[in-house]
Image (cartoon, rainbow, N blue to C red):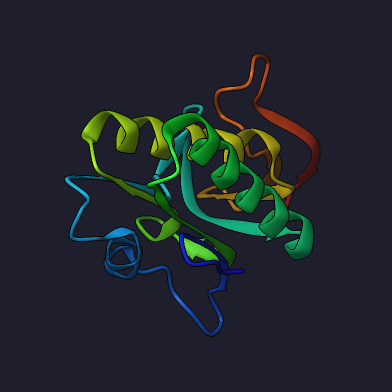
Length: 163
């Protein structure tokens, strides 16, 4: 999904990777003095457990709509001279690989920071993205994507392998 000033995409890691340089290029403009970039990577430990990777799945059409809606809300809040890029990975990622990239460009840094933060928070809180963490012990757990939501953590399904 793309507009002149908003670009939203899902990178199926079988065929594509997230590229922060592409995000920065999209949000750049000669009149923009402020560009903010958020990059989310798969970390090696979560809730005290050693993580070997993460699988992301999502309902693509709705996720893209939520990404675009979040970018539109940022424009309404931070001003019309704003460019926003949102990209999220889909599939199995290893530790250190990029899961999400959000960039915002605007004439001033305050708006760039605020826009970038509001968009990533909306993606984490509202987009239909499911995360399955894979652990060193061989099991995996589906968890909520929102790490900042009260009471969040692992929910629903655990898949034990060899236990």
